[in-house]
Image (cartoon, rainbow, N blue to C red; front, top):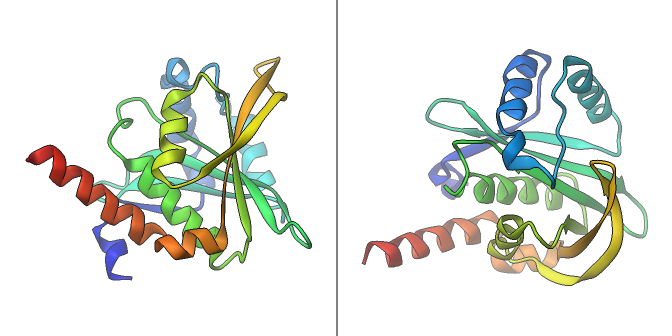
Length: 195
């Protein structure tokens, strides 16, 4: 995986020792996250998060910057359903001071590689509130397709909120070249900006 070395990030599983940094980053990023996502901001919440990751239905990853191992984002695969569906729902968020740099794009691409590779999933779905234009742009950058809108789909922050449904299948991701495709697009986009 020569191309993976060119990525500026790597993904890893959350650990108990990450609690303080994770909670602090979530607290510092409340204005960035709300009203779209409500990540845990207490030690009990973090422990519950880690316990949930021990279940077969969940996988969690921290997106970390290679140059200093800083946690720059988080990604969850939730409600992993095996059998006929063989898919999962994807949730993610970045942190104040690290957004707009492509870190989550790269991190999600690496998670997608694992989801379709070692986890053997067939489908990944991201549900995004229509007003979360940054997240919609991220789904587009990753090559997901919009499948529709689900009215009052998820209860976020105590309110039932509409969500756009974005998805990608394992064969679609493979045909594009997976994270290698995302990496090559990034360099193409960067080279256009430098011209």
